[in-house]
Each structure stands twice: as C-alpha cells, then as structure tokens.
Length: 337
Image (tube, rainbow, N blue to C red; front, side, top):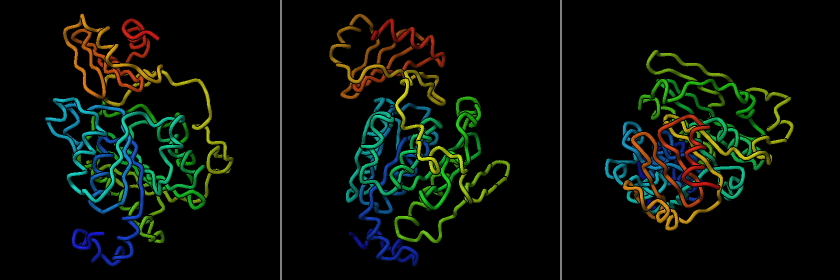
C-alpha cells in the first residue's frame, strides 16, 4: 500500500491507515459502466480498492460523453466496448488496483460467478430486471448491494445489507418502476455524480468497517426542483420473496428473455446464441459496404435507420428501433438462429 498516494484519505479520521488497508484488501463488482458506473469506478479506483471487477455489454457512443466521465471522443469513434475503454483509463489512474473487465450481460446464468469473492456489488445499470437480479444474488450470498438510479434530474439510492436491512424488492415492487427513461425525459450529468458519490460513500463506510455510520435510508431527490426525501429502511416486507421467503425470483430458471429494449439507445438487444464466429459472419455480410470488425464485435449498417452490432458471446444489438417484433424480424433475416 502506497501511503503517500492515499495520504489525504488516511488523514480522514474515519478511514485512517487501518481503513485504507481494508480497502486495499477488498473486491467490488460494478455492473454497468455507463453514467453511474464510470463515476463509481473512478472514485473507487482512486480510493485504492484492491480489485474492481466491471461488467458491461455496450460500446461507447458520442451521446455517452455528456455524462460518462471515463470516455472520450476517440473511444466513441472506435466504438470501443465500455468495459475495455474503462479498464484502460482506470489502469492509467491507479496501476496498483487490479481491474477485471468483462464484456457481456450480467444474467442468471453468470451472476454467481461474477459475484465470487466480492465484498460489495454496486449498481450502474439502467433497468430494474438487472437490479432485481443483483438484489437477489446479493441477499442469497450475504453481499451488500449498493443501489442507484437516475433519470431526468432525479436520483435514488440505498445501501442494502442482508440480515440488517430490507431489500430492494421490499421497497420497489416488480413492475412498479414506471416508464420514464433517459430516452423519453433525458438526464443531466450532476445528478449522476451525486447518486454515484452517495453509492461510493456508503461502500467506503462498509469496507472500512464503519458500518455504524451507514445512512440506512432510501434517498430520493430532484436537484433541479430542490426536493429530497428519505425513507427509513425499517422492517422488511414479511411476504418478500427474496429477503424473507428466500425464493430469489430473479435467479429462478424460466423462459429466456430473448429481446430487451435498452434504455435511451433506440436499440433492442437479442441474445439467442451462446457464441458466434465474427470471421464467419464478416464473410456472410461481405456484400454489405458498411462493415466494421474489431476483436470484440462486428458492426453492420443495414440501411440509414438500422444497424447490427454482433458480439462474440452471441448478443446482437439491433440499433434504430425499439420495436421488439421488428427487431426480431431483422435479426432472423440477417443472423438467423
């Protein structure tokens, strides 16, 4: 541990040298390296957390740069996977921290592996399906879950600790998250920074063994209209299928979610195959002029509206529509099953 690097943080009495040592021995998982995830990972890497595992399925686009602080114009021009672009930036910030970058989805098929050896899971996602997945695996494996969400000028965050607090399902019932997204109402960067900073602060308290200072509320605020609310994390819902009945619905095997509309992207993700050969697909699309292949994906522009981004793990982003039926039609026409 480099004492000089963290000297100002060590001077903070509540962390001190012992807390800094605990941070250096900790591992966190950040799911989603977009707006929230870039700020979270930047702060935790600078704070000296020993290992940071990041997971993201997307690539950098120019519209990300307004709020996703680890990326630049070159990343967008190259359409780099966010996990790779973030890893490269973070390693230049702090070479002492181990950064593990994973390109792909967090799903019920891999979430157990993703959370192995993890001390805290931090939410950088944009959809409640993934949040419930994180909530359920955390409460099943007794891992704290740092939840955060932003849209427009509004933010919401809580730090859930198994056996000490209720879980996300107790406070937000599945299907009750409303229909506003960054695509319909937008989002401003300051609210991203605020929510992420609150997520990281609670994480630092926990990792440095200062749990007595955890906020223990679900905080919701609107920084534009100067509103703030705190809901105390009191008793859990006695009928909660996660933290009370131990059923963990998001971890149960069921029909595969084959099409998912991505927040703010005018994009549908389709995941039917477990692996594809980019070389073979490039040959298949050789007659199409607009074709770009990288080690991570193949991007094919079908027409002025529709393009396909195909990843080696079998995921396909149908960009230019949110119509799942039409997206599946395009997929079947060009990819097949």
